[in-house]
Length: 128
Image 1 (cartoon, helix red, strand yellow):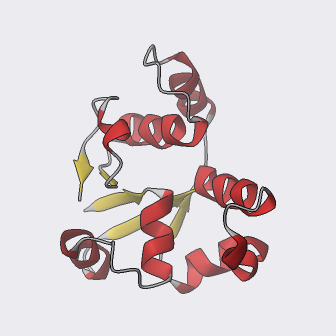
Image 2: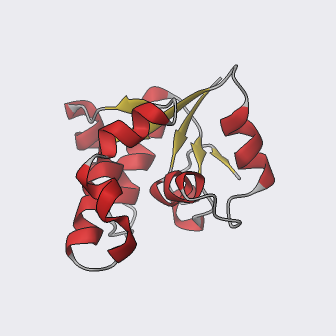
């Protein structure tokens, strides 16, 4: 099965953070599953690093594609239909990164690995 990692799940996986759930960890470790990282997550990581919100992620922010590849994951690029869906949803949720991940989940029919309750407001499948 295919899953899309929310940005925090991607970071927690890379840095072996205990906040990553056992379910999420098991899905990521399962060689039968394809794990995707959105290009929107690269945008989010780079933005938050620049703003000083991810000061310990300098090495990651300099080579996100390399980290994705080394982790055995695959990039999910943002498409125009996904961007339209993200921008057009009537939900009041203002986080552009969450909106994009939810739109990618909806348009591609893939669940998001996340513990972010706000993603659920978009009606997409969530696993945690």
